[in-house]
Amino acid sequence: MDIENEPVTVLGLGAMGTALARALLRAGHPVTVWNRTPARAEALVAEGARVAPDPAAAVAAGALTVVCLLDDAAVAAVLDPLGEDLAGATLVNLTSGTPEQARDAAARLGHLGADVLAGTIMVPTPLVGTPDALVLYSGAGGVHEEHRTTLEVLGRTDYLGADPGRAVLFDLGMLDVFFAGMASFLHAAAVVGRDGISGADFAPYAEQVVAILPATFRGLAADVDAASHPGDEDNLVMNAAALAHIVAASRSRGVDPAVPELVHRLAQRAIDRGHGADGFSRLVEEFAPA
Ligand SMILES: NC(=O)c1ccc[n+]([C@@H]2O[C@H](COP(=O)([O-])OP(=O)(O)OC[C@H]3O[C@@H](n4cnc5c(N)ncnc54)[C@H](OP(=O)(O)O)[C@@H]3O)[C@@H](O)[C@H]2O)c1
Image (tube, rainbow, N blue to C red):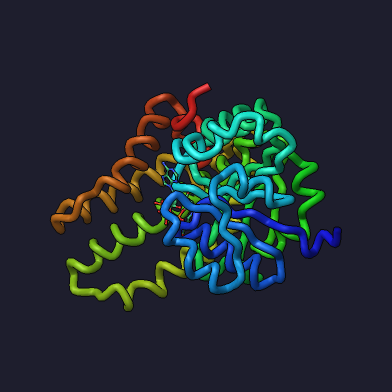
């Protein structure tokens, strides 16, 4: 069979599962779908998808089955009862969760005889199937290799290694950075907003700071990997003083200082332990003590 046209099954037709199925249909793949609530398949049938009567028939129809359900409990509810019907199946589990859940699902389904590639979708539904989409994968490397052409229909694929939990671990790390960045921007917007400065007036200055973060991250990463935290360019005592100013300016404006206060507390704790002359990267050891 021409692998470029291999039949693909999609289990789960929520917003994301529907976007995945649609991208595969657009690329010319025969697509079989199944969803707990059958009505959600109707639009895709009009676009050429076939509906399977149950999950077992759906899995049997695809060379590859993409699983995109709400959470791991839903994956267990749909797939675990299939038992031996999963023997020899190739599953690409794009359901979000924790690394532990991804590992557990891969072990459970692997025990039933399936090859499981775990993945995590890093973009919202409108970007699925475009060159801007990114999907991280880990787990069964053979599945990634063999079906790469099909997976590339969904977006750029990055394979991160044999541990099925690793893709989701990277996902959570990226979201950690994203949420902290957004929360810090909103906190800063609240502080300057109290003095009548609009978000739009402040945003270009926030962007100025964001522009130096890529190089800053690379420097912090090198320090973290070397477990060395030189403070020759800037040290924790100086950083803590700046953080105290942010906390004070927040308080005096009636703005909740929780975000900078947390960072200040970590810096102060490191100083109290005798690390005041170290650089900011020392905080990694406050988050994760040896
Ligand atoms: N939407 C996004 O932008 C986005 C982006 C990245 C990653 N994701 C991830 O993609 C996955 C799906 O997201 P989504 O946006 O498609 O969610 P959704 O629209 O809420 O759809 C949830 C899907 O899970 C099914 N489901 C839930 N509980 C079930 C159960 N106990 N048994 C069988 N099926 C069950 C639902 O079936 P019914 O239709 O029958 O309720 C539906 O197909 C999630 O893990 C999400 O984190 C989503």
